[in-house]
Image (cartoon, rainbow, N blue to C red):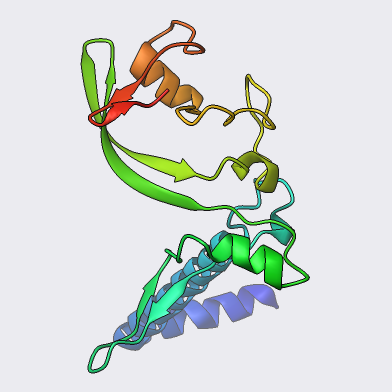
Length: 175
């Protein structure tokens, strides 16, 4: 029975080639679109899930509505807002500030043009990222403290231990 259905289907595909190509191409494009939508939704729903306790973390954004212009959404907020929200809104238990700042860093005799993320001293208490070395509670006790990823430490200092080493920027000491 199945063989009969397959034979009839193949005969129709051969007899109506253009119609068959259009149908098969439409099916392929439709399946590809569905796969892309599923991958996009999976990526969006898994955003920052690797951060511990990410269900209780929120990112604040600012939208500027200038007259005669389209609204501009920015991932930057006024500096006192996290502290004010913690003091004024009962559900907010902590807040921190995170902003990228372009710098030219010097390690020894080599210079690197990097975007450095500047954070509040309580950053590792709010966003509990694991550290390879050091205590998250005291990592920013000194104003010039720096936390490096393993790849950044290798980039700046090679295979030597970066703890206690110095990075400087054009303005002075970084850490």
